[in-house]
Amino acid sequence: MQDSGSFEARYLAFLETITSLRPALHRYCSRMLGSVLDGEDVVQNALFQAFRRLDTFQDWLPIKPWLFRIAHNCCIDYLRQHQVRREAEAEAAISDTVPPAEPIGPALGRAVEHLVLALPPMERACVLLKDVFDYSIEETSELVDSSVGGVKAALHRGRTRLASLPGNPTLPRVADPERRRLLDLYVERFNHRDWDGLRELISADARLRVADCFEGRLSDSPYFSRYEKFRQLWRMAVGEVDGEMAVIVMEPAGDAWTPVSAVHLEVSAGRIVRIVDFTHCRWVLPAAVAVHVSSPAR
Image (cartoon, rainbow, N blue to C red; front, side, top):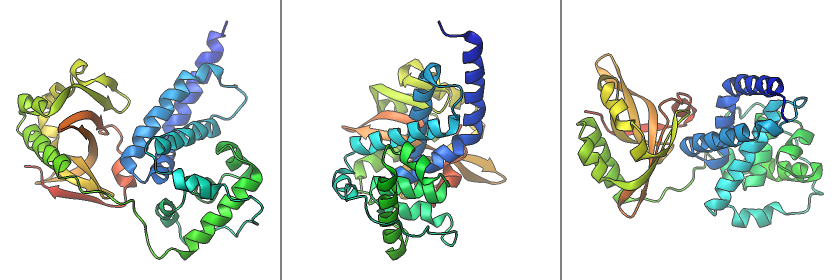
């Protein structure tokens, strides 16, 4: 039987750690996936998994590497599900006898985080963990479930490629006129508080995630009524976050509206099937390279 005092202490340590570590986890996941929105969604999954496993966590181990490993595995699962790493896996399997190159150094600063998007996942993870988050090679090998030699080889390949890059690569975004049409309608009807019109755009079994507050069926939540209650605080606009189409949450700032957060809408067969609201995650937009509002809130 589990000691309740021990679990309570573990739980308090968990809460204290994620409070300070959350932005770093988001930073890592965002650079692994190439999207600050997907990155936060994956962080949410990672923290949920970590909480479920908390009773198996060894008290004498540090929590931070444990959480990073869970977040890393969630990133790899996401990449596998989205089928973007098949070719990279074969390339990452190159012999690990390659001698390590020198670290990239501080000259590139945070630019490295965005450049790594051009690397296969293994190289991307090793460069981020070693050169950005300052884990040792031994710690990195444990986090990515590889040998020390494998990490050294991945670092060599990653650093060599980064040194030859001409600019800041981004993931290609495929134009989706139907999704843009739905986002425009969603924003227009939201700003007019036309909730019945909004529901016409959303599938009956649509899912909702409001960071740290709710996850489940949209029909089981008071989602729109909460926005209605505080209607003077928010407007919506269609825009892009690092080139990814999204609904931008705006707050009043004097006589204008300023972007503060985002809502990600997943679309299938002409209907919105999932809403992910990042209103409570104020670190998401500042982590983006570029936020563009293409249709102003009115």
